[in-house]
Image 1: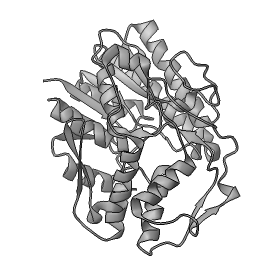
Image 2 (image 1 turned 135 degrees about the horizontal axis):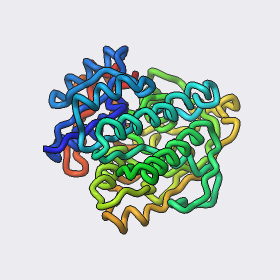
Image 3 (image 1 turned 120 degrees about the vertical axis):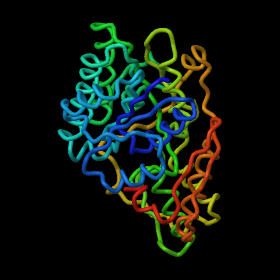
Length: 345
């Protein structure tokens, strides 16, 4: 039986990837920071089949110890500081975690399990403001420290592939969302805020740039793509996305429609929420992934926002039942009210 190891298993993507790999017949293990006691409790309830290791990607010793014990066939490096605005506030922290962490993971794989296949999560933020749609050959001019860190990860992965012959790949993924997104991300901020307004728990929603356009997709679709990347005969880099962009204004309209409210009286523009530099549009050309291994996003933008809005309405109404979504041939469970605080922490 194949063994998979996931860094960042407690994040949104890890919590989609783990059940997908389990259903594929993998033994799954994941790395969880030692101080995340509440998240460990949550993951233990969700994934009885996952072996959880304590450690940190910024500590090479813990990675070497874990890989020496688990000896995975496939490594999925998802752990990162992924909140773009934070990279303007704490740039050295973001670079340390994202870049040093990736070096540590690649080095540990090279030293302990050089036969393992590894895919590193990169981001469409590496492109910055370049013409759309963006593919693997597009210029890369990141507009944030986060984007710079993921571009560095991309080049590091390529170097380990070229210099050491490792089966090292990257997934250059567009924005991918789900009910597990923390509320600091714009998609979840919108669906959660409008659900709270609908339920009388909040009066207004404050937003910044409404014209910015993003290629938003469903997290599970991208985890399926990362798995497929590692099933190829040779390592490579692939852009994943939906190929369709929507504005923040579109996002607001879709979420308002899903919860049944009018935006006119609840939307306020707050200039303090504007970023120092913003990407006007991000839109993927995923033709290489589609041609090479037949990858296609399964969930539409409208279906994604409806799913997230229904989940947030359920939480605001105090319902404790879990929400189960069937996608990509598996069931994904989103925790009910009693685990809500842990799920968004």
